[in-house]
Each structure stands twice: as structure tokens, then as C-alpha cells.
Image 1 (cartoon, rainbow, N blue to C red):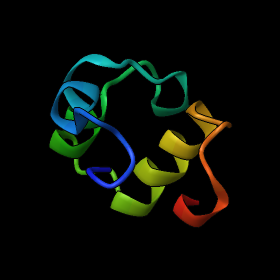
Image 2: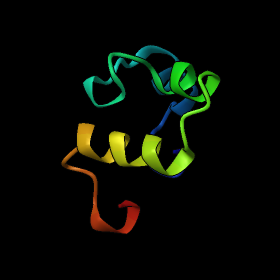
Image 3: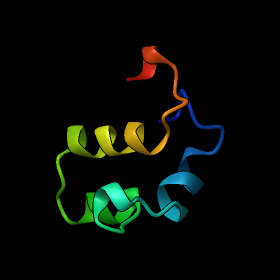
Image 4: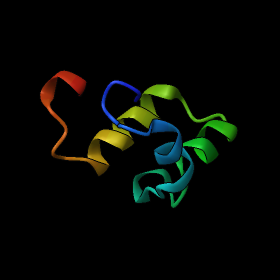
Length: 54
């Protein structure tokens, strides 16, 4: 996340993802979601993300 988002800490804390059931990245991590599942949700939430980050 730090390679793509200017402020990845704020993104992980504040951005709610429908793809994560209405949770933030931090909430999903706290609930033991798999890292790969979280990353796929981030990519789905940010379709403009360049291919190299997918």
C-alpha cells in the first residue's frame, strides 16, 4: 500500500470498502481477513490502479 498511496496509514484507517463488508483495511486486518483478500478489495475499490500494483 505504501508504494501506491501517498498516505497509506490514513487510507487504511479512514476509507470504508463495500468490498470488505463496509470495513476499513485496519478493521479487516483486526478481524483476521486474509491479506490477499484485503488487497483484492483495495484493487477493486481503486480501478484506476496501474496493473503493476494489481
